[in-house]
Length: 252
Image 1: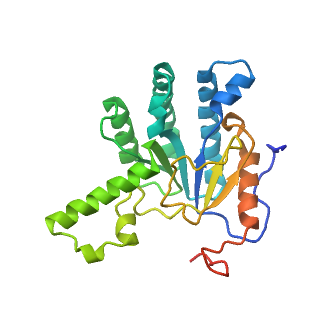
Image 2: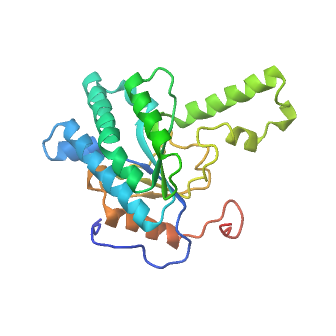
Image 3: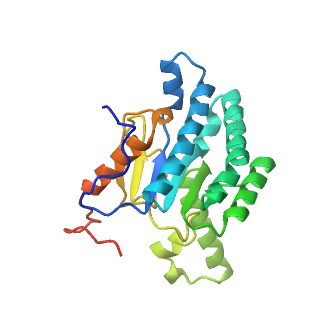
């Protein structure tokens, strides 16, 4: 499927623009392998694609962008690849934070922070503190993240509150769990994009994406550009969202 890189904005079609877009950034290794390059080069080009996407998302009016940067399962990759990925993540934060701040981007991380490299934790904490008041675009970085693990953490918080007597067991419902997720306070994702043509959720935003629309593109992540993003947005806007009912629910 050919994807134009020249599209400037989504076509005017039926459904409103998504407020929250999540992206499973897949295909760095396959992109590199197809060109006879080491996997790390695919990851480097993937960082460039991320820079483009953050900029384009802000320009196109998306308010929340959640990117799946490193999953809890990714630790099982070869040690050198994990080390290379950590170095790229640190470099991205160091080199891009000032520009993100100037652009009005608020940075936040979701995922398990326990046991992470102190240097990464400090970089993330500093980025969150610096950009806390920004409101043009919220960039949510899912790092050391897994949807099942996130739900389990929320359940443990609820169990502890019930055990301490600060939460009535009868008050435990879907909203109570939602408020204890890493994404508490954020709108649910309207659209999940996955690159590289794979048809899997891969443990990403399992709770939050209950009624998200999914768009899978055949392009590998390093080649993801404005045209690919616009294509996904156009596909989203052509759909009739139902939320389990017979009629699409209008956005409040």
